[in-house]
Length: 399
Image (cartoon, rainbow, N blue to C red):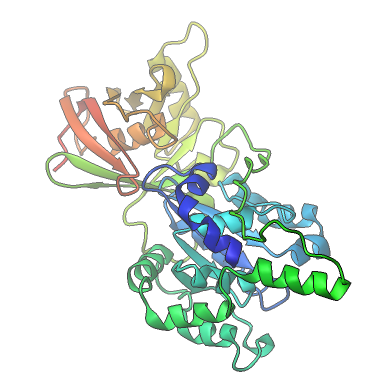
């Protein structure tokens, strides 16, 4: 706890080490071991975190107890979590301090009755309980009190709304602060007190240098998981606001379950070569590979329309860095979107796929290549990444 507190002044450095962009939120899923743990009792929380939190607005870390790794093997843990790792879940190795850095960097956590839940709450990180082993928690302990104070994750409400509510309500909560204060009765003194005790028991002379809690080392880049050349299919919502503003939110299609209230009127975006027929046959937008040598963009689009029966828009990267997007409709219209401004094209959000989604929603009900030029200010996952799109060939401006 002392080292976590000593690290708090460097929160921005830890967030940068996890690759967070300004405005992105880091959610830490903490799981102890055993059947009452988060992974043992409610693995669906991992799916929901990847399914319901927009991929451009959130990063998710799974901090899993070493007993799980060494009881089941690293191969087994990665196998269980493989679909989520492909979708961007971060999984620190158990022998590193990356889980500590993640707690310092976190915006919120979803935990169980393990010690990380208590540490996170003591740091002031807002939290929810995805599981809690009442039967294995000592009566009257700080953990029992915390279990009564933190809200449980509801299966009937979008997870993002629950996370936002915790982030709004828990900072400054005196009850939670009082429970967090029970972690240690000698804050920031444990290193000195324990070293004095150990050397006295060993009947050795204590070193002269001070024993102080050091900040946690910045985590090295997490080991890259093997990933497929085809990106995950996404359900995308594009909400039109006033003054030509649109908001884009993307969610992995594979993890969508019965709780779909967080996805009002989405469309499906898949990449050319998507192997899963559920997404390949139903995709509204196909993000295409470059046309074959000697093949025009329109010819490539017609080939894609024959291959993907549900596709209405075929989109191609129109320039380096995915700053331009050229798209064709099944009815023969040619559309174009171009990112303008200093921030456009920076990061994973401003991509051909995002531009294609904005073009798709801007098509309206008419057909043909009669549209003019429209400029739209685009924010991705609540302005995590903002940019301006110049749209050509769309049938109407956004309301």
